[in-house]
Amino acid sequence: MAAVGSGGSTAAAGPGAVSAGALEPGTANAGNVKHLALFLHEAVLVQYVDTLKLAVPSLIYTLQNNLQYVAISNLPAATFQVTYQLKILTTALFSVLMLNRSLSRLQWASLLLLFTGVAIVQAQQAGGGGPRPLDQNPGAGLAAVVASCLSSGFAGVYFEKILKGSSGSVWLRNLQLGLFGTALGLVGLWWAEGTAVARRGFFFGYTPAVWGVVLNQAFGGLLVAVVVKYADNILKGFATSLSIVLSTVASVRLFGFHVDPLFALGAGLVIGAVYLYSLPRGAAKAPASASASGPCPHQQPPGQPPPPKLSSHRGDLSTEPFLPKSVLVK
Image (tube, rainbow, N blue to C red; front, side, top):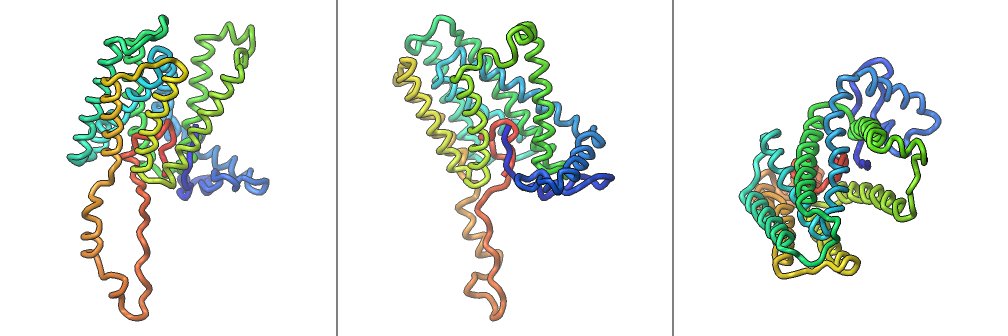
């Protein structure tokens, strides 16, 4: 789990409540460890009802992680990468249903284009799509991807609703999310592989390749969080498109994946849909609205400071389907 954000908000007033800034990197030194402990006790244990709300998205995220492994085990990497972009569609739909958010016509058109592209890729996969390992089950892989996209969309919107409906900092929410996720993951591990873990140890089978995947996942989460904080939706759309291209190239080189015209058409539609959905709403109207809202800087009265520049960073979590897991912060 990775998170980036400002912990400017504070927990509810009460005994031991301190600034949520104690959770920011570099602030938890020897002088405020006690305050940090008091803050966590107040926010996590005393306000346990608030903490329990995070159990729902944490359970869904844990399920989603396992579904992704099932999907990638039964689908070519390129096909999985293209199909997994359905999370944009599910996130948008849940935003409309749960947060009463409206989408522009361009966004609805891009979602339709996205669905069409994924459908074409899956049709190509069902029709053969070149050689594949005998132990792969495309039907099970598709079902796992669809379930993962549904869980990703619901959990992301649910988590956003919690963030906007409470005063807790994003660092605190991610900490609560991580506590539940770790506990649920350990319970699932013990239920599925408890005997083997007890006999061989927790880290049995952790080859260098496995450690590489673990580190790559952790670094990827932090990197996406940085992109979300410092970039805009268009750049994230390009990054998503580039990941599809790179996954396809790697699949061709490593697994002998065959790119036929049908797959190229479907992947192209998905890439185009991601770009169109990422376009900022009302960008063309911004200059007109800015000029109508007040005088230009050269029209400022003498002695008055110029108006502050508006940040181009978009802080709305609603149109952010690119976020991984709990990285829901700007």
